[in-house]
Image: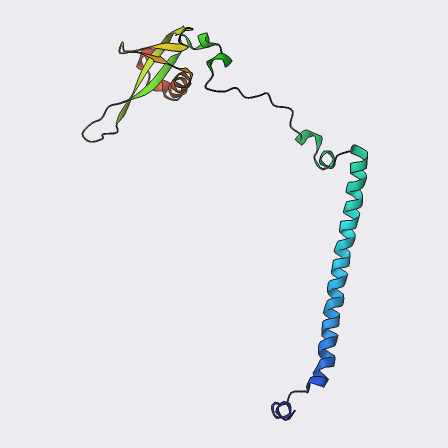
Length: 162
């Protein structure tokens, strides 16, 4: 007590009433906020339960009909040749990179163009004849890669330009 008197502070008993009042006020305010939020939650739960009873599914009521996707067709395996007509590639131009190392750039590559000239059912491979008379056989993965590479580089194909 003597210490409180020296510094000019009130005693614990006098301070206690003020502190309890402030604490009660804060608790009352917090309780009112929580009750308000609880009312909103109760109302939303009632709405959702009613919608669920009506439609039988909570998901249907929360998603608009336009947002529900139709059933997708199954994807085909890109490595299987039987998913496509193999003859559709015959006559198609293709491109492939070949290594062409130089002293300045050991990783240098050059693009070559060719044409798919036939398909072998026996081996399931396509025969490619390049513009420089070189030949090679491709499987389905290589054909698709070659077609895509050609489509992005066809402006460099001199055989078609001339």
